[in-house]
Length: 357
Image (cartoon, rainbow, N blue to C red):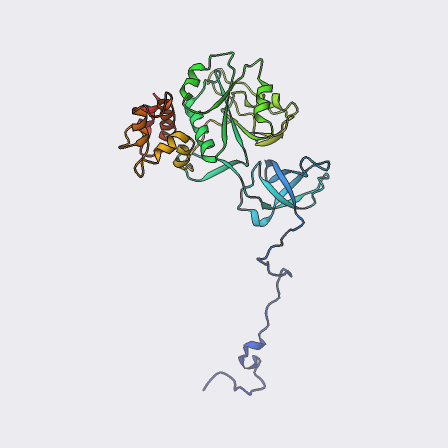
């Protein structure tokens, strides 16, 4: 005998198990399910990110207009996995008045023209974006105290070439040591160099090179980068430090990346000093493209050519040996090979040391 009541049993409390009569439990939070559709934010205003600090972004709105103002913002929830960095152009909604206590929201990041990146080390392909939309990389190196590091400069140059940013080298503290021996290692590069004394920085010459451009200042701790930025932007008030007399290393004083407007027009972005610069994310093809004359000859190289001294049938090596690339061809090839040796796994440490000797 079945335990179920007959279909027409009036005492059936379940209504014949009819699913159409099932009641849904009300939403305990009393809110509607989150929609995947996002508003268009047609009323958003455009801002420039000038600094980032612990989840807050200081943006400049109505740039170069009478109503120019600084607005503190946060990121929209849908951008939580998107990196927002100094130099980004973004769309803002909410309270963009810039009044004390106000907070706007970043809802979109504009397409970036350039990206300066670095990784934790050469084996780490995960990149960290330092600055967006920069035109120029101002690499600050001291002639002494601390001693210049040619391999770190190589890495800065590789990062600039990979990002499509024009490099500019500033040699500081030239009153302490002659920079000529150090600079001789880079004669094969089309690299602009500005020399600076501790007691007489060439502010006028630098202003002419930085005007109407967005420039990123990078350098080893203690080379005088922040001191130079303070000279270029008197109200910047960037913290400065001294070099340890025992270790010969500078102390980190700048802890954040900040964008500063130059008095003569343009922007300079000061970054914290670094002692290493990983290049695990770099495409080696971008390095060769930075050497225009060598890149043309490199089109004749066999597929997968490393362009290093032991590369078989390398058209660039053969052209330099035949003196087809002018008086500075050998110097430019040496610079190219030194940069490539820092990236190519096949080169190894021994290959890099041979080129760097």
